[in-house]
Image (cartoon, rainbow, N blue to C red; front, side, top):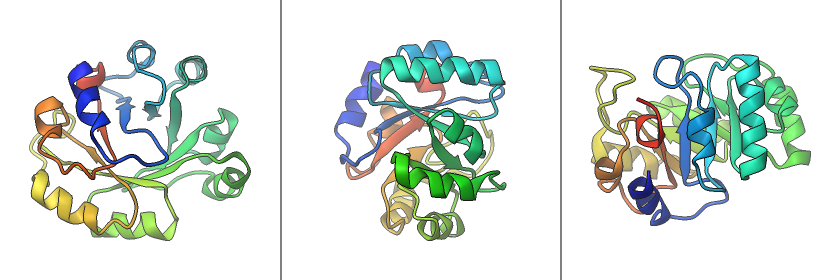
Length: 193
């Protein structure tokens, strides 16, 4: 993790985290131990966690001063005082209550994008940042075509908001991204298999 942290520190600052740990139903179904190793200011994006795991993760995030994002459920995000992450290819429950509630609480809204349609959706919803993927070949989606650093940079330049790289992120691949990238999101490089 320290090497990836060094790469993340060189990226362009924005109001959100430069380093994001993602949970994964297969590779990292319980991200609490990995989250406990993150430095303050990093983020954890919780995807499909069991309620007790999410509650424990929220406690760790508060204690360690981490940003917590909940994927796909605005009401659940509000309940935990967390930001909301919008998946690209499926709906989000409780989006309207979250959009109303986030004004008072200054909660982050991020959106996943795998191409231009996802970027347009992020702009339309005024997301704070977009997680653009897959930047590189990834173990989470073996065989899926990756953007590569040039296509990733071209799409990120059109995002109209900070772009975070996701997919196959490690110290070596992250160093191939432009320094104006907003952040790095990973599973394996931050504690998952």
